[in-house]
Length: 498
Image 1 (spheres, rainbow, N blue to C red):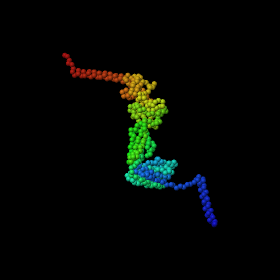
Image 2: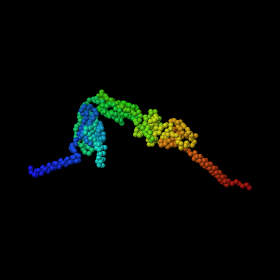
Image 3: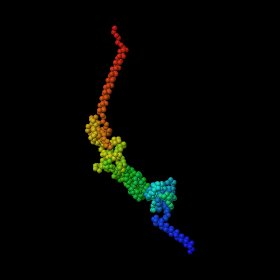
Image 4: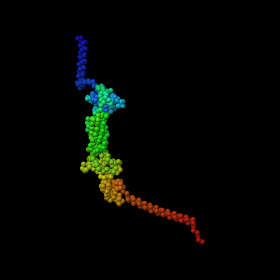
């Protein structure tokens, strides 16, 4: 071998050794133990239906599902385009799977025979966009799943009246976007499903959908579960039920959803199949609350004393002007008696030591004061409570201790010789004053004592001015008489005697 060849081989070997050393240095010093290069796997999307393996009859509801697998960090997908023959089937609705509850779905069914569905996780995309713009890192909460998942369930009603084959196809998948705003590779697996329709009387007596407007069924609805329960408030007398049979020509009869009574009410939904033979009954046990009470409801006054709400007795007294309603107090929706213009409300509570009773509760001041019809006055804008006269407050002059009998009981107070009855009362803030009670109307009004000294002086000066006015009038009359007399005397002088 020549020297030149040996030199070339030496150089090649040297380069190889250096490369190996560099690689070893990088892997060892920087902790790079292994590098796995893996090609991105495609998202596989296909369309399926359990009904495609069975015979369906005209009028049946069938569910078609769009599946996807190998999803990594997805933030949006679609538009999925599904095609069908609108003469054969009628689109009803879609349902969103629980796994994708964070996504917002949009459905375009405006073009007969074509259904376009898209979904996006707006919250995750907004968080990622904000982090990117402001240059900080956040946890990637986009959706990933190694297992196959359902993207959307679609319900159709079979409308063809004769035996036929119904085909529903997945035409387009749209884009599947990840958290890096990159489109994932997508391929379609099963492109269509075929259902065989047989034109015979259906024996299906099941429900496809069962809902109660404003309430959630327990357990969640399933066609093979026939017993459910709901709880309604005391003031609810009727519930609106929507029951859609699997087969269009099955009949549905609902009983017991009106005139609900306290306690348990059983609502029945009777389904009779198209053939008139097969029947099924679903039950909803609607429990109507005996009271408006929420379990555990209570309130605390300024002194830290705890009061527990108790169901109001059936024959309780409602003061004039008050109505029964509910208010949120201390985070609980509770029954109260309320009057327009009065901030305080009447609550039926127990303080733990005595029997439950009515109390006046002010939500602003947090004061809780026992309500007694005979010693509590409710005015247009405040509530008053009878109280023993403080030592530093004097009874108005001319009044002495007395009591009267009102429609709600005996009232202690003071009366004068003119029949005016007053009593000392305080409001919710502790401000006290004398109030006059009108026996005819049963109403209270604030009492203001008339100053008798001022009245006497007024009378004295009144009579003084009256007397002066009379004297002045007499003087004027005398003057007029004298002047008139002198004038007449001059005009008609008396003749002189000769």
